Image: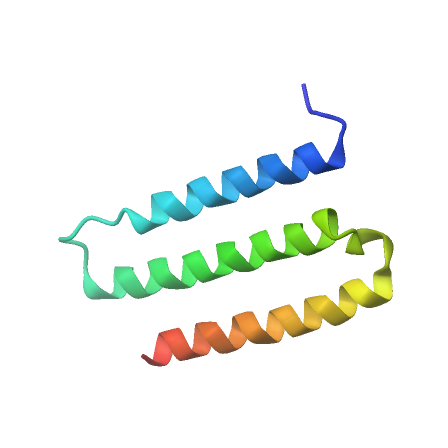
Length: 89
């Protein structure tokens, strides 16, 4: 059964995304070096998804398409810049 309240669904999505990020961060120390880079990129993507859930549901931007696009573009640019800097570092 799915909860009908959008805030509860958003909270459950945040919990699930946090659990996924935690699972990804628990890499084994004997993993190849490239695995840490992939894991870091995956964690950044999960953080971007969490930020979108917060903006759309908790701040109510889901009902304001123009603001949602503007914040989404800014957030996407920031996430992409962080991903590029992480990959280069």
